[in-house]
Length: 435
Image (cartoon, rainbow, N blue to C red):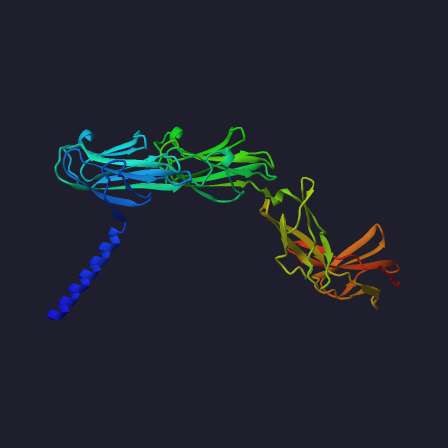
């Protein structure tokens, strides 16, 4: 039992050491120099810990060189265990950022177990120094942390360096410092209206006043603001604007406050609804036992659109049987929405035979037309004396006047709801009725 306990203790110690090693890997412990000439070199984006010796006049120096690429910096410090005389900044630990000429760029005063981060604007490929000392009369040593954070400014800061983006592209960007302004450019197409939609993902704004909110602008080449979306932390919004076709415009993203955080925006055209176009197609067909797929020509303001680029055509039904056929035209590319077109598929023409029967009536025999709902017979002694009758039977007996000659013809029909779709008339068949 004792051996098992020892094994468990050994495992616990190993796990503890692993966790401790992993936790300590977040920072590096260094010794600072005692003068600018002896300053300890540190890297950006690496957190360091150091011990400030006790006693009056003890000072540590660190130095770092900024990357060659333009970017934005943060200066983070934390007084971990250094005791200070009071909460007055004059007698706390001083963290001073200076240049090679000892000009002060930033100063933070921190009491026991307090921390702070400030945004900085520094020059590329330049060496800077950090001076740390305690203004309290304290003889005890203590520890502190510091870190110079850096993020490359990948977005253009002027119209001349603006990043090219496409319409409908969701742009994800970052404001990296108090003076950061991001510029993008896009070129319009044939559309007249556009919508810029934007989100302030996590950029803190100074207040609810619009003057100090994060904003996304659409601007002309002469900096005229044509559309603006102002947003507080976490909010989304959009603005609609009319722009000239085939023209380059700029998007400016900025925040008058801290300008630190992420954002998104999209510039999209207000596309032309396909219902606003004109369609040309054949509206009447005759049943032939095969699927009927009419060709469609689509135009907009005199321009003929291109199938496969501006629109697509589909046939949601078989369009084989007599009745109403359907075509769906769907907008593509510059066009949006869809429109349903209808056309008629009439039954085939049919024929008939007619004769007297023994009772002096007109006996009509109709040839069947596939897919027809029924037939309409027209019989007349003159153009002014025409009668019509519908039947669903292939044989029909009609009462007529004896001694008269009748012209008889027939057409098939398909009934769709309350609508009749007719075929063409057959040739006329003449019959003289016996007295």
